[in-house]
Image 1 (tube, helix red, strand yellow):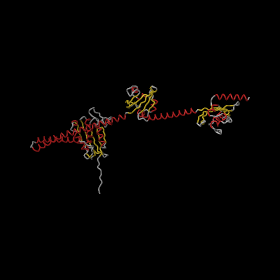
Image 2: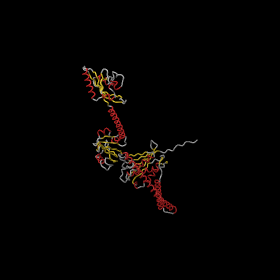
Image 3: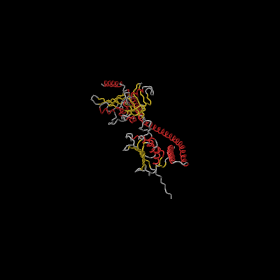
Image 4: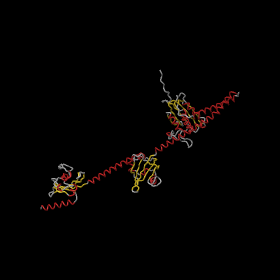
Length: 512
């Protein structure tokens, strides 16, 4: 009987050895090893006599005492408690002291009475797999870090970045794209097609250019000005640089960088306005020089006319009618001299010299130069000037130019026929002088009222106005710390109102 058992035991051990697995069998009550496979001995460089009879806790962890009965980590105890195979992961040192990972499967084996008598422990060295998994995790972390860096790089772009697959589904939609179009990133990624961002057949045209050779090379599009369609239906001018993304030679996506041109266009417009203002200033300077030259040329003959007229009156006995005619010549000559004087003052080249001046005098000098022009022959000029007004600090020539621009604008509005009213008075509740220039023209349409002081804004036909007159007047008054208003009169016509601060001389202290 003993020989038969021994044969069965040898046969069983031979079968187990042939599996090639690192395994051993322990008694369930003492946890001592009664069988150990050759694969296990080889794995840990052990000899059979060093293993048989040893407790299992010594085999892998080299402990001198068994695991506590309530241990959750011991695979043998787990299998005994549950009566089911138990799988656990152990980290133990190998013969060289290097940590290895073991996947341990402990199988409880009952005897003929059904009691668990033995425990089969199968160990698999999964160190290489764990190292590969760790390496893969690190690679994935590197990829995640790299992807996060690229995402942050794209998101921080000052241009809007939009990428889409070949079906038009949007893959990337940056914050700047949201600012330009009004679509949120979620709306763009889930509900929007790239074709929806271009008016008409714009998307198809861009793909045609991308696939051609004439716009930066095949698959590229450099600095192409297009329009982008926003969520609210507005069209935004865009400078687009785009490219096709290829994979194994096939088109898989497109990516575009969108530069918002609105601010650039606005700045260009402002620059054009400034350039035109400079040109207009140069033109006015040239006219001033011409006026100065003409005035000097007129002064000589006017001086001769005046001189000889006085000689005729003083040295000859003339009939009263003749003396009256000569006196009229002298009066007209004097009037011409006054006009020439005003032209010379207009033509003076000054560097914005401010001084104390009288608003009424400046206004009267301005209208004196204008009222003799043909445009004013059928215009009645009404002057309602307060003679008690205090002085103001101003550049007289600039102030005269502001009044001139508004008066000419009023005369044009009345088409040379009507009533022009010039009125000055002291502001009732502020230390300011008020100048009102009113006409009896058609008035200002309410829809254009907010824009009348904008440079180059004009309702006149091409060639009849530059649109700079009112804007220049507005700028001059503003530079004098004043205010400008425009309104329509209830009885018809328009009124332009200037408010200019009163000049207050600095107080001087008393000397003892």
